[in-house]
Length: 424
Length: 129
Image 1 (cartoon, helix red, strand yellow):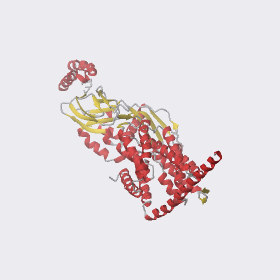
Image 2 (tube, one colour; image 1 turned 45 degrees about the vertical axis):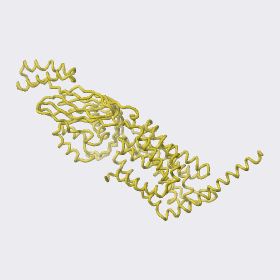
Image 3 (cartoon, helix red, strand yellow; image 1 turned 60 degrees about the vertical axis):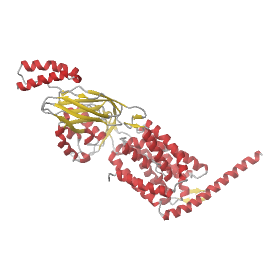
Image 4 (cartoon, helix red, strand yellow; image 1 turned 120 degrees about the horizontal axis):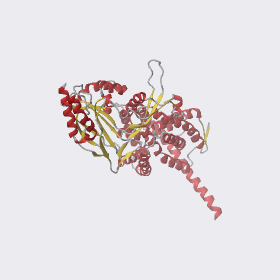
């Protein structure tokens, strides 16, 4: 007993001495030793861990060494989050095992930290491996509970979440569905975990067992803020129990032009790269006679951590101009059948009304899966266009086309001549 | 439906055309691409129209798709304006550069490279490697 109290007292003193967390630890430190020393009651005052970082500013990401002191023998969890927040949605289509019904509930938030992780003691690695063995269907809430990291889960626990009762039909015409009453705090916490998982997807991005805890309670780990992270403040708090939480250490991440932070895409990118990529892919697209979207979108998705909804939504309007100028040029030589084009166009108007909503409803993996198959079909179509049979037919039609073009040009000059003649 | 084009008449089954166009539009707007490479085979193979009629008219049809798709994506907040403003000029410049290059390369080889590239991309998306 006394051993422990002595330790607690020593610890509290060490907290007071360690500059960083001193301000918030002072009340605890001042109060704890006399109480603990004077009475032999069980240690009531929780021992607040400390946390320090070796750098307080970063230039477009980097690695921070984090050290601190906690009560000996306690597992140390570090909660790491960004001040910057973003949008995330989660569509609950998991069949309820009791009722056998699919909920079709859509949860949306504007408030989720764009970077969020919990660092665990190194000895929890095995538990994480077990979670990873569940594959894509792993449960974040279960993982938090099993590893004990749920004590550190705080920053996203109270985000504002909107819930909607939707149906496939409602999603088709683009409605969120009927808004459900506000969630209570427990439900908010539960759904926030699902949103966190929907946003960050993999175990490795959310839970990292890297905190090296020594028997005397000192600990150390490295926290990496990746390149491309938004310019914002990043907070680190050490947690050893439900009321044993340090004040957060704040790290400032800065970026400088030509690196730019893209608000909706949620990442910073050196703007030269997307420009060059679009230039190269679009040029190639024109050469192969198809828009570049087929190639551009998967590349955007692979090269940068941009959500698939933003990739689809941002790439689509970029082709408007080339299509518009194409229509203008074909129309000039009267090569557009307006009746056919508009009839099919109206059908496409209907399809395009539905498609963008579907982008929101599918997960990244589903998006990649379907896109992968679309590309395979397209490659097959294009391969067929390089076959001798197709080329022979195309050559014949190309000849007809050129003949038409010649006639169109002749007609145009004749018309011009007819117009200019009366004036003379 | 009867289509008249430069004095020639074509009879097409517009129902099949519209259903096909609708489905292509769903896919194209969902994934954010144009859809031309699917519309052209639909109109030439399923409707039996000649290529010279299809190129221009399908472009018109696709324009409707791109307009509506873009508007809906914008409505849902899926457009990153800054990123768009960087990509859009690049796409326009490409429209001027490409015809210059087109005179110097064999379109058949462009297509072959495209087939290879898209197959690799597809495998990467499907997680084969």
